[in-house]
Length: 215
Image (cartoon, rainbow, N blue to C red; front, side, top):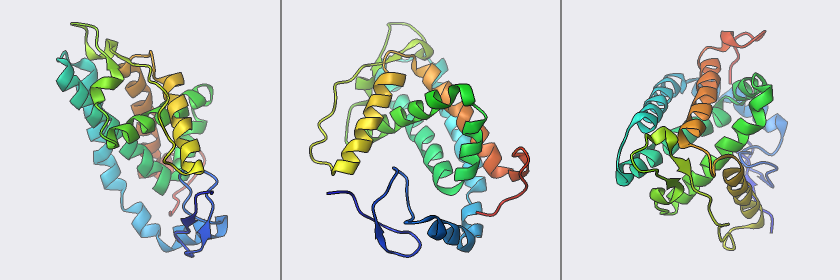
């Protein structure tokens, strides 16, 4: 059976067409945005410090020379911050998020799939996976040189068909954009994009040709 969600605006059940869908129609999405303009704008300060925490976590991870247990803990923390900022911008500032993506035409697919791959890591960590299992650690090398391990396809038999489809997509993105690549490269690419998107959300006037917008 297809996954059914409750519309955040009208409460009617609907089948989501994409992973982050919260509304049954564009009309409900626009109505919710009008009614919650102040609430949606409020996270600006929180976004600012979350981006700071994300970039600091990335810097610690990619410049340190640690043993595997500390690397694994730092990796889990950095994944958490990156996916938190990503989810916040997707949910509350989708137009700024899309504007930032549009500014990276040549790398858009790479950025999207890298973030999707990190969502897979986040979900696996949330299911008690050992973060050390995601990384290959060359002895004595800085963290920036460490690489993501290829992973076997997960058992998704307990998920609904729609949830299974999304999680399989995340897994494939992980295999395509993370596995075999340096973790420093992944986090640098994602934090650069999210910092740009957050700047647009915090300062709407910075969007090319777009004035202040209430969400």
